[in-house]
Image (tube, rainbow, N blue to C red; front, side, top):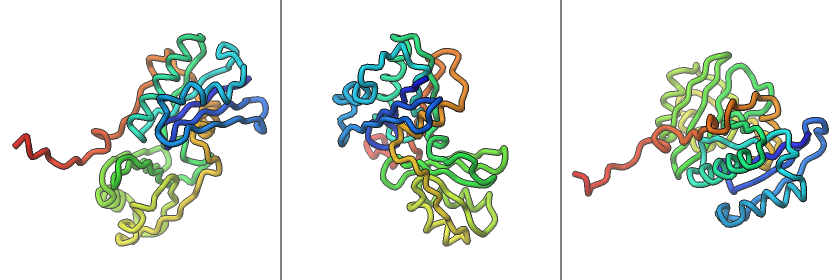
Length: 220
């Protein structure tokens, strides 16, 4: 059975069609630039190529954190499709979408938001720690929780890696081989339970929209 995947949190708006019975089958399409709102429906139609929404086994959507506007658009599309066609919906965290299957017991996954700001999820066995903020803030928090040595990282760790290196933690990036975010989302969703209701799929916008904003001088 085929699944539709939609993502707007991890880059330009993208869509993917995959088949849970045929790992080799996939179709992907990406909207150019930031025109997700204008081209979103066309991108989805491009991957469906006549496949009715009602014939899908499920719809998967990237639930963030990530790009604020793209995340809202993708989630709105996905919920609309799920309700209209009575298809079950799965929300996939950006952290899960970026992390490769069977990662090491200790690893970190980085998601970028505004310039100079990122979110991280640190996993140690069954324990998870998440934080959003400046690169320095993330590096300090991670160093408090990790011994010096090597850290396997997924996602874009470049901004945080130098600050971690100063604290004795060397980042070893481990890229997910799937390039299109929507395909990462749908492949992950196939191994997850459905939401009881599409309303239950909610966006993770990050801590206060990526935390640490400069004070507004007009409010002094």
